Length: 293
Image (cartoon, rainbow, N blue to C red):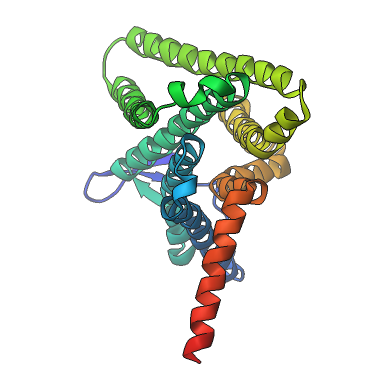
């Protein structure tokens, strides 16, 4: 990516990574558009399913609902720009547009990881302290955790962007990076400790193992998938080059793009309550259409 000045003296960035030939431009556009719309669709299905089914309005599903909403934000932070670039053969983004996209993507990443941390805490209480679950995870506490997740992620990314852009000594930027890196590291340690205890508790009984497979395994798959994608992206941004490991870079880039799509699919496949409710919704739609005919 290189920076240039246009005729109005506005800073723009030229993106060199997007290389689409004239022959396959429309095919790629249709494919990515379908992928984007399907991502929005499956996340909305899960959100509406949770809100329409009273039995699903429990802490775990409310956290999952917010995870899906954040997935929509994440998908919308990069898919529209990619579609625009492919359709109009544009590889340029303005300075303001670049900052806005960076802010939204960073917000999505911070919020995703914080949501996964909160969900790990919820599963820890549910499996390790089942008798106290209702007392600990009250509806007020759930909404407080959800609100703090959004607010702290917004604060985190806003401070990071402001400090990065400030024309002052880099010491403040280094301090800010150290604080937020430590925070992410503590979140990782918390998740690991939570799952060590969850696995220990699950091995004690068959019911515990079943509960782990149904509710914790989807979360664990989502967490590992997101963490690997994010780690590779960060490592490549810092140490990679334009020529080395190009195939692996492209595979991991595509994998990172479909993270918002995989989350609702992973949970939808493993949680029987969601499967039953979605199946019921579609059966009602099919019945209604059949009656009209």
